[in-house]
Length: 292
Image (cartoon, rainbow, N blue to C red; front, side, top):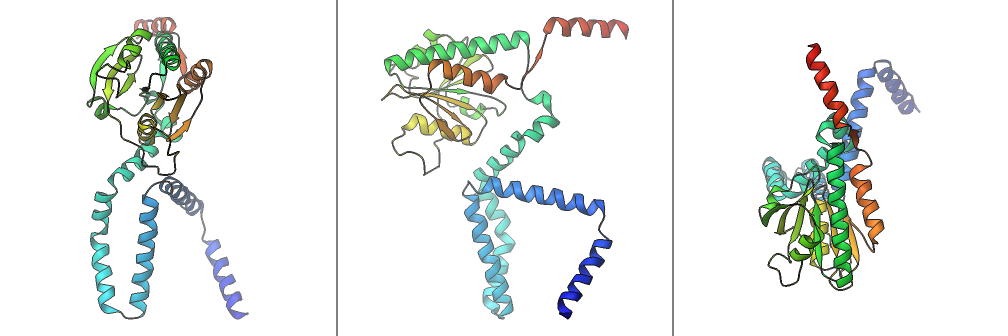
């Protein structure tokens, strides 16, 4: 009973010194820890954390039981563990930092870095999407395999370097020619940057997710792989069935119709776009300049 009263009194004393700054400190730390756990639990880094916790427990027990050799061995391990973790889990750590950079908070803090188009830019992007959808529909009818990647905020320069620069206006004939089964670039991915077919024949990293459908082919695995490490959108046409699939955030949704695919792409690109009337913007800029 005395133990409970003593702890209660200690708690009351602690609460009397509790300030708003302490609350904010605890809230921010909890938020960071929560999101860190959410991010790492779906990567190999989750196994790393489990392993480190086991070693920490082993180190604590070795110290308590006065196991000198084991304690010294674990102590030396922890001295170099940080460098080892950075080297071995560089891809996972990079993915975590990219996810942090792509979250909603970072977009609100820097809205200009995200999607803002003037009215001309919106029309060009919509024309690009329409051309891709028409081409994908044509490829579906002939069961011609295709993989088209829409670059978004995360730049894919390292992926583009693996292919051939095209930098052309998208059209049904262009995309169909690229993915014609005897064409030299048909096995790789097409990268759409802005409103242009920027590169073709690009090599993508394959997904490391071992729980996906084993019947998925290389195109689907590549689309999942690139969307796991970036915010890109992947559109895939199956060579076996002609089915249209869409990859986003490491997830695959399948069996899209032409209309469904167009609506989905429009929603992904334009749902939170701030449209700017370029003429009104130009007039306002002139007025501000003349006043100054």
